[in-house]
Image (cartoon, rainbow, N blue to C red; front, top):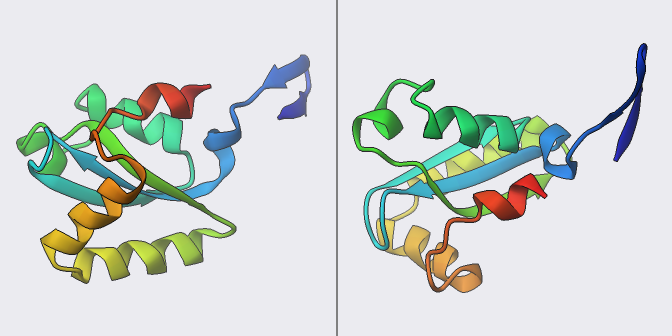
Length: 111
């Protein structure tokens, strides 16, 4: 995606400006964290570099194992709240449906 800027053209990753829900893990079947953001690339970078204090930082949860893009932040937040109410086994099943190896998807998001 290309966004005009005052000083020329700025390239912006597709993921950077879309509402998203994401699940982080510290390892396969490990501790899970669910969040929502308007800038997935930046938010995951913040988790990885300790710029987000709280649960994810405390338990070293920084591996992006699942994400879903949404049209609006309101939709993403609604989905996030929904997933947070799920049983852990359902969250694991959601992750494994698209990422059975629990691979870190951060590089995919940065493309």
